[in-house]
Amino acid sequence: MKLNGKVALVTGSSQGIGQAIAIRLAQDGASVVINYRSHPEGAQETLRQVQAAGGKCHMAQSNNVDATIQADLGQVSEVQRLISESIDRFGQVDILVNNAGLEKRADFWDVSEEDYDKVTDVNLKGVFFAAQAFVKHLKQTNRPGKIINISSVHEELPFPHFTSYCVSKGGVKMMMRNLAVELGPLGITINNVAPGAIVTPINKNLLEDKEKLNALVKNIPLGRLGKPEDVSNLVAFLASSDADYITGSTFFVDGGLLWNYQEQ
Ligand code: NAD
Image (tube, rainbow, N blue to C red; front, side, top):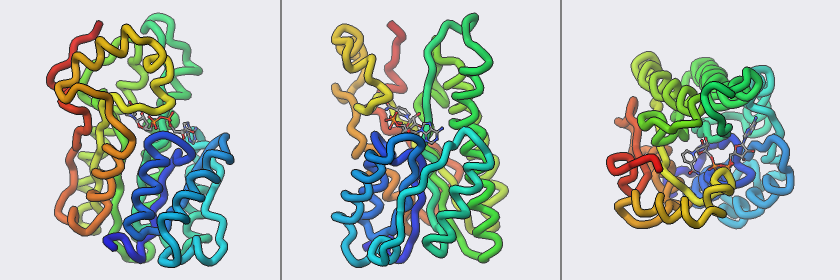
């Protein structure tokens, strides 16, 4: 299996895309650290499926190490603790998937500082400092590694009423490009995976609004919303040695939405 012997940390993996990524990386042989903020039961469900996928090849999971770690990625000290606890429990981390994220809808003129901070602290600042703590670990142990950020089509595409979200994902785009140049000489790759509209709890309101949903599906050339597995398939490739020469790029998983989008 392609990820045998590797340890992957997936942030925000108690549900949605993060959960699918954790399970898929385990299917490919990785030991997986599952992070959650406030849903331990979701993290336990991810763990159950990770264990079912992995069996004995998971060194930590088969040694009764607790693979779930609570941490609020909106706080830098918590981000740093998450990385150091992952290393303490698993001995190493080889793959960091920055998946945790949130969005807040508001007209631009109504956005509060509190909501702006909530979004950018997790989606941008948290990603920055998770990558930094991970890189320090790789430098100290003189090993290569892979960073995969779950960005969004909205690192490119305007999303009216979600300006703080676009600020965060656009920031992650430039962070990724910059770090590809700075970290390449260390053997560390970094790429973004940019989903379009995927069926997860983040889209609860949209999924419950039939009219909006139908209008959106009409904008997607492949004629459907994405599944979390559509995203995790690509992450598994980028996490593997098949992607060793790939860094500094964004890969869209959007059914063609990006080049065919109209705001309703
Ligand atoms: P989701 O709401 O189901 O999952 C988001 C995860 O992030 C949850 O597990 C949540 O607990 C975690 N999270 C949020 N704030 C956190 C914090 N402070 N600390 C730790 N964890 C925190 O949504 P999803 O669709 O699975 O989103 C995953 C990623 O994919 C996000 O970065 C999101 O921006 C991105 N994305 C999703 C879509 C989509 O259509 N679903 C599209 C583009 C990008």
